[in-house]
Image (cartoon, rainbow, N blue to C red; front, side, top):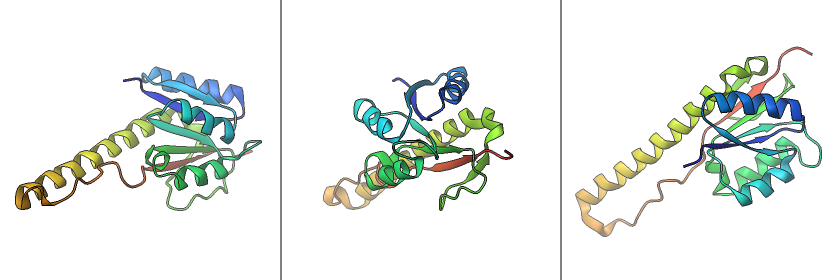
Length: 157
């Protein structure tokens, strides 16, 4: 299975830098220059994670996050927000300071692993329930719910 990360960033140099960091950890990248392009890329291929810049032309990262959260399928993909703003707030999302983007691949791997454990746990609970009451319980979708999201913010100028 290809471990592709969708990198949504309007600055090509930043996209390349993130891509190099991810490649060093065995990830390939799918690139988009704004939120609208990201939605198009998502219709073509499903990544294991998404990295989103907040401030972009055409469709901002905030608008893209809202669109992802409205979609029951896309909101399950682990998401990290990268921004140059120290005042950016995304409710319920952890924040990491951007100059330290070297930790981004590890954060993505951790979020993917967390998502996989949650799916396994839900499947285990379903199997335990079936063992107690037989097949009377309908199949539980192991993938329901939102995936973890994180915010990476750049400090300074």
